[in-house]
Image (tube, rainbow, N blue to C red; front, side):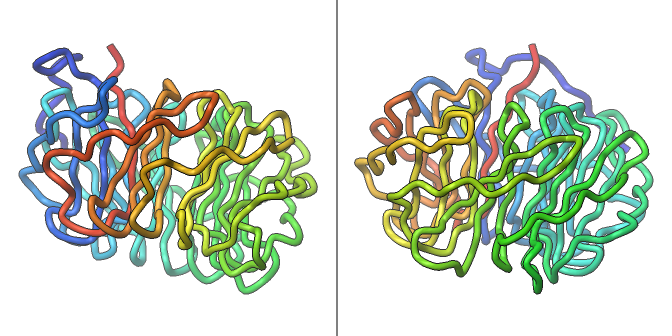
Length: 353
């Protein structure tokens, strides 16, 4: 049960926006106040620390909870959140995920929470209520995702579809399902020709496209994008931009306006970004003027789209840049208290006022 409730809309100084980073070393998560000048103060660590490294983090849509995907049991953990920071840890789900979790996502309505993990059925979902936490586990999808490892999860903007990316042994490493208050519905027909391993999946803000982060493909393939239709499912993969770099891709994100797309990957300069207009890529944006120090593992935008943050290997383990129609701005100063280890996940949160 939840012991504390949301205490208010603003903290000292009026802050109600935050940036969370998860990483490989205790305390496994750091959350910072976020503002127009970038990183603010680090919030106090939770009183009950995560008990293992976390690869994924997500705030609830209303900003009153924060959830982590964990490498060790109980594999998923959640805390109440307010402008004062971490509140009480929610009770663990009565039925735990079966193995190490990679990513976590709340539904757009905030009434469900989903994790992907390294053992079948590769995805586990629960009803969610900010007053009581995890509900009884939803039934697994009748046709489980194709693959050997769940790597990414995303809801469509309407919340009526859920997509799962996997490290697949076939040519169908995305599984998409109808979603409702009853949980998983009918599985859509698989996409084609996407390779065997995808490390992330994201819907565009208008729900018309799905972006993926492929691994182990030929040079020039750090992202792939497909049209999406809630009725018919996957369309034919879009033509890639001509100047796409190579590398093992880990994360992909659309800007909130849908007019740009950013990928994070394993080769220098570790990120690339493109204008995106209704299925067409523009000329690649210039790389950040302050280079990243290592593999980018996760990329996220805040709701206003005015910045972009990346978790990465190599100190300072998290980097953020202003974002505009011209692409990357001058890098924000590093947080005064750095994460304690290699960055694995990043998420922006905003408390509804």
